Length: 247
Image (cartoon, rainbow, N blue to C red):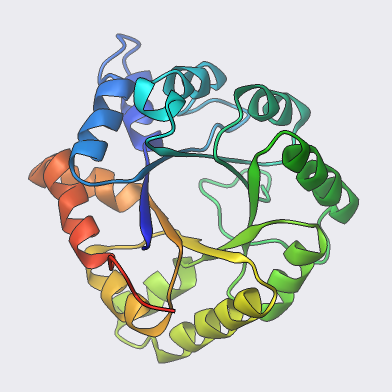
């Protein structure tokens, strides 16, 4: 079964624009779950421009999360305060994402220039706390190997380039790149996740080529929900994600 984890950062972004507490993050999370999502993803950045550190604790305290009915995925870089919080709250998964100064959103995976000793130390620390780890990687076997060397349990393949190519109508090469990275991950016995700019339209060709364990989707769900409603939008995405792709 492929899990759909809904990133709720954009709900927090809208809330933060007014300071009134609305839209309510937990209410949004529950609407996503009502649409069939099996997980919730939060990416608290250092500037707290959308999800705050306090929000991570709020979602962790939801009965659905606390009782283990919902997968809880926290994304972020290797900054000490975030790792301390993740270790304390013990989500299902910590997805390590490299951050570039001034970026609007994540735009690349783990690379040779990144801090490999810090990655290894983080993975060891999370494993000791019983937290599964994943690393955001480029659609490139080399990036997967670098992440695996850090001791992670899985990778999340960056699908932004594929989404751009799909929009242009010329995405065969982008799919080939993702498949090559996925084959490397499977060969290394890693859990295989994917995310970034995935839509109902581009998920189909992706699922037809590669069997994933989990998709993390946020921006397009939030965008569609403005017109379709959050629960209906999540149901639309969940209908595309296969229940069983086989082994």
